[in-house]
Image 1 (tube, helix red, strand yellow):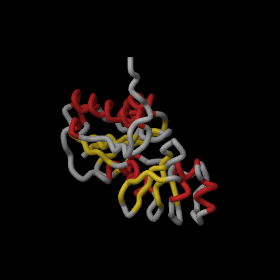
Image 2: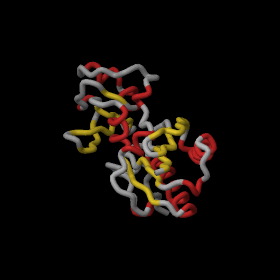
Image 3: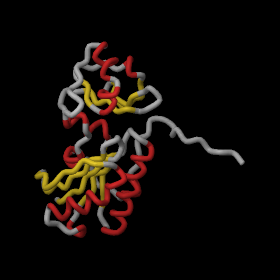
Image 4: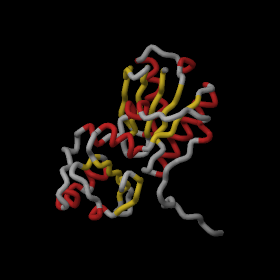
Length: 195
């Protein structure tokens, strides 16, 4: 099964082309260049868009705008290529790339997204408890997490990225991409303006 996987929920967007578990190509860039990355991955893998069997899409939590970019791209690709997909938690992908580590994503507003008892949660960095913490939230709040006894790998450690190759491994079931819902955990920062 040829799967295109991508996640745009954090400040670094990741994408991968995976064929039956074999990674044919992988990229890390920004959400704004996702479709360019998709094109480059297909060329690198010697594949045509019509060869795709499935999409694995990072659904967050993370940046509201980033998550929306990823879902919009997935819906456009699914409609034009008639493929199905699966939503994958960005926290689950981070955890899969760093077994035994606690995923920590920067949620802005002096908060982080993480797992508590295996469930996604929003916490103040001082409330995070983990022995090894990975993700952009772990990098941003390194001092706080380390003062709580956690180990945070160096900033350039690839375990801080929700690598799209793990999204392809975490597919539970394929469905219409229009049915895939984002995982926000809280209301967006934008507020409706009254006339």
